Amino acid sequence: MIRRLTIENFRCFQDLKVDGLATVNVLVGANASGKTSLLEAIFLAAGGSPEIVLRLATWRGLGQSIPISRQRGSYEAIWADLFFRFDQEQPILISLSGDPETSRTLRISYNPSGILTIPASSDKRSTAMIDQKFDSSAIAPIIFEWTDATGEKHQFQVSVTTEGLSLGGLPMPSLISFFSSSFTAVGNPSETAGQFSELNKRKQGDKIRSALRSAFPDITDISVEISRGMAMIHCEVPWVPHRVPVGLVSTGIQKLMAILLGISSQARGVVLVDEIENGLYYKTMPEVWKSLLRFCEEFGVQLFASTHSRECLRAALPTIAGNEQKFRLIRMERKKSQCSPRIFDGHEFAIAIQEEVEFR
Image (tube, helix red, strand yellow):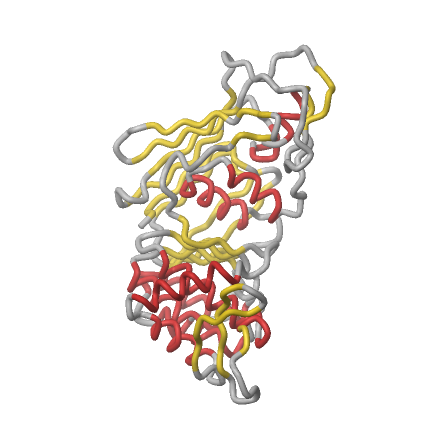
């Protein structure tokens, strides 16, 4: 469990502290108030690899191809938007504090004493293309440094080869089992099929079946089958004579299934869901919240989910009742160039919903 989150100089946060986090943490707030950035900060610190930065760029709609020239500005442009007000002179610090398994700190900064050499040739198959331009100014490499709960440092310097950026393997084990962004699809069908297969081998597949039937009564069974040459989760529904891929029936069902499988696939991890209500019918949301809390408790997973929907928040009330200590509401607010949170415990969260207080 992450109990405290601190962020310095990341995205829209110059200095942010969030204390008293719980099992289920719900983020609300206006557009551009920092909800997604807060999720990204946790994702970066808990994920343990510079490669995550490229995924964030794709989810933000910034494209997959990264042109790199032999100029300093070209290399630094890849990382510039991570820094508060694009000021790359100040390091980024993201700290997760709580249970030993989840406590870690990430520092992102340039190494002023290092010199990065960028080769003149390029591999056209690479997502990071390198052209022939040359800038005599020295390029300082960016350093991602994770510090674990024991104080051991895991440092990675992002270099450039003829094939593009060299991001290497995971310097630290990842705590993240799933990240769903409003900019992405619901996930890779083969990955979710593999997760369900592993769960089923442990004789726990019925947990997913039961949760899906509670939210979507028409789903009578699910199984892993081969379709279009790959393993996919198929479901049985009364209006089709044979089993079909879940994605053909409903992307909402597929999304819930992917989240629940993400929770179950990595015990004592963290699950991040941006705009959790997307693709889900409002009448199914009470059962969705009930299943989410049940799975989080059973697998020891912590959930951070953002939403803009009043109906989604109202649907959480039956699950919050009696479980107030397991819920937190985080309202993100923007004041000029900075974003900051207001924290409400589960009791205040429930009262606000009951009294129809507008806090989104």
